[in-house]
Image (cartoon, rainbow over all chains, first blue to last red; front, side, top):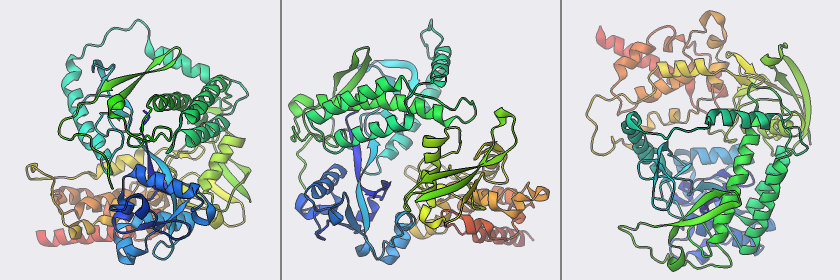
Length: 344
Length: 238
């Protein structure tokens, strides 16, 4: 779960995705002084370098005071694409710039900054969507996962553009077929506890809370902690600060107030349920990142900037324990492509 | 800057009649109306219900009536809303479930009634079914549809109780999308569904759908092209 992909070009400040198609068609990134800075970070491939490389480059420019007007963004200049191509091939991107910033991207550059985009990790599954429960790949009978919630281990530490279609079209289909074939004969162990009743009681308990903490306040703090310490750049010290912070927020969450006592379209209750899951997942992401003392794909540790295949050419598996998340590792199965040094 | 909103409220569980409630929120000119609604919910009144998901006009879940015109609050910036109180109501045509949430089941039933999927008469090829950029261009605008229901809710034919059996512009945009897809072989089945007064002939060319479409799809023109196609099919038969 430590592998969270940041897309380099989110419309600033909303974070709306400005797809790679823009740079694919010839758009370039410019910093405050108007320099095509990707030439320095990736001399051969420049603006088309991998998402993690471009995201870090943008934030390093910002750190060095070379953002636009010293602020936290750079410019994506679409003028090399040409008016006709923008209209025909980048219609939606142009519409975002027009609607949200009042900018005509034919003539004006779009302000962009890295934005949280995709989670490579997730519920571990085999290639047919069957959820697995340990390092040896034991299948949990009758439970399947597909889509971004799942981790089929194909994206490694850094998904490539368009490959989320694999989750949808390939593994969604494979999981569906496996479910069709296996549903008639799946043997699920009889459970003594009634899980539906337990969830119902848990929801009722949450719904009745009358504490002092507000969901919105806790969520904003969670977002700041994750952006400051768990996003594009990570360090041991920062990750520890964030883990402590998230644990504090989990403790505060136990005193959350649910003011809407209604049962129809109760979004406050839904957001409370979401926030509780989000806080758990934050702890898992940060703990996985803390244990991986190397840099690989989307996970970049400033204190361990090199890749360390000897120690970490492994998948992280996290187990829920009463004392907190427990980190274990699973071997990577490498077939056709051996890991190589990434050179641009 | 302060933004004043007058919001439609209705909670069936409380057994009360619908009413309007006024709110004031602080917002930047670059904030979306959706941000204002969220701020009401998070900071003032958590009982307010409205659907939302992506927040930038891609998911189509937050359609509502803003100052009398159907649209997406995630696409309306505070700076373009004007100075007065902003009137926020649920989409017309559909039954209100709570506050700004309407029952879209009938909308999707009608959408599904026009077979919104590729119909093919040839065996599945080894690779994908190919299409040239020109062939794709024939229906590319229609692909942008996000099924927000703003067009159908704005259509005077759908709003009129006498004619509300009309399948509506959103379903027709999707029918257009497959009718003009070079890979689709289902045109006779599609035309059978469309060639009736509740189908494409229900359209009275009033352009309201085109005016409100948040993805700027030329809805009325596409319905017009369906009508031409149906007329052409009839000529061929006779």
